[in-house]
Image (cartoon, rainbow, N blue to C red; front, side, top):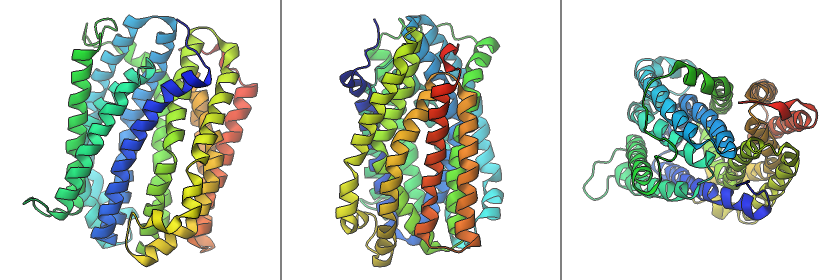
Length: 443
């Protein structure tokens, strides 16, 4: 059956992913809010250490996005049994990689962070956080694989329940373990890390239950014929490797941006992580639509409906802009109320309020840039997206460094470099979709 690309069908695929984003950002907001009240050092350290952790997670996440794109193509072709073979191959790849990354964090994190973190307090708190958070690598990687399977087959409703379960567990344990409630020890930043690990375990258990009990997993050949195949691994990596590097670069950029800000002071770092948390909330619809874009582009190309791709992208861009714009008046009209969710420090609130108009404007650019960029990813031309990402990142970080550490401009001016990043990403993606050779992509 052909995948419909009308607005209703796009929304049907997108909204469960958006709701999953809501749940994930409940975790993000509560982490920031609890630690913002616990201490400014803990707030900044958890923010930077969390991004460092995500940088490493992008290796597994990028691999599963590659799986998702190929799964989407096979789903469009009606080749369901190969979907299970792709999933099974993912299991063989992710287990050893997760073990290697866990060992890397344990052995090398203190040395790496000590070279880029100026504050000794933030350095030690970051190490404390990662000493526990690193145990979540194993569970998060396999959660990514289940997400790739359900997104690629456009069965996205399960993602909502799994993510809300994860978020609920995380929020409750955050409060109990950070502040030491109900007789539990007061663990501070370590409590936030432990809560995240436990919530990832719970999410994985739910995915496993749903797949084995409520999904016709044999139809997709899931967990069948569990034999290692170099051919299958290389097939996935051909698509996934550029995405892995691309996502790794993107998170390294995010980490570098905050490391640049950390050089300007602990206060600016605390303000910026509050802004980052608000930013991630505003991005919720965009991430849902971008995931739908890559999946639907891959599906309809598998159905050999190449001529419909531009119309699909146009509709998703329109929906993304409208959904994103709905959040912005809240930030512009009630900035104090929004920022006070994260902290009761008047100076932090005032600093964050100054940056909100910048991220509101940047989000409109991002709504176009990220949808078109994700659509290029959905075509399977992942080396192209890697090139676009590299060019955009290089220009973006150069401006951020120049604004912050050479010209010593205000924090608002440093954050304005977001416009530069999104402008280049969007322009290059649109040019490739208009003039590039993506129509004959085979994956």
